[in-house]
Length: 110
Length: 117
Image (cartoon, rainbow over all chains, first blue to last red; front, side, top):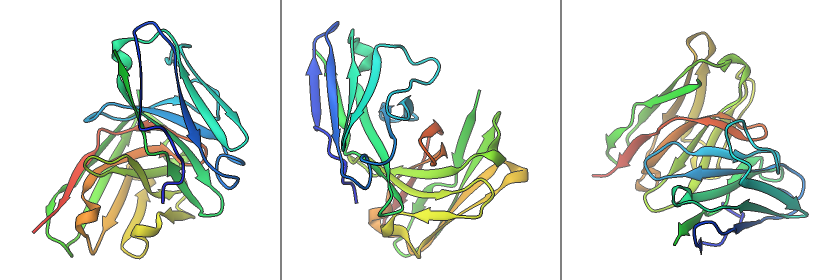
């Protein structure tokens, strides 16, 4: 049922910047908030960005979010090896009355 | 600090049932929409079910409708997921998460459900 599209993987060197895209449609990203999650296998997923571009307390400003139309983007600057994880976007779909997650993007910090 | 602790996972045969529980502490459980999200082996996160704070509304992903039931006991700060007619495709780590109106704010560590003969 996942109709949020993310690249399977991205990579960059320590200290560099990376962006992860999330593409949806008019019934999900187009009209609802996007949130982003960081997930290390075997651990609890962590909320990184909510309501498109807001950071919870404790999340460094190296992480940023934006939304335009039916797409959203997660940006991470000053990459650290500790940022290696899977990243997921999510949005409610008003037509389906369901939540959708993107397929996930594996970030590798080379 | 908000804590969500899942339990009840395990090995079950196809067609069997399991009941997952999520114990919440240190936050306003009775004021929070609560959700279950799962991750099958080698797959991404998949939202499963959601229940509003007062239990008035519940929502499910199509693949579990009619088989899974989400419920909650606010005085006990607990969330549940009754899973019936389990199939191998339901094998996953199941996470309890607070929220579901706009985002999922807090997550538990998950409980593993394995459906196999």
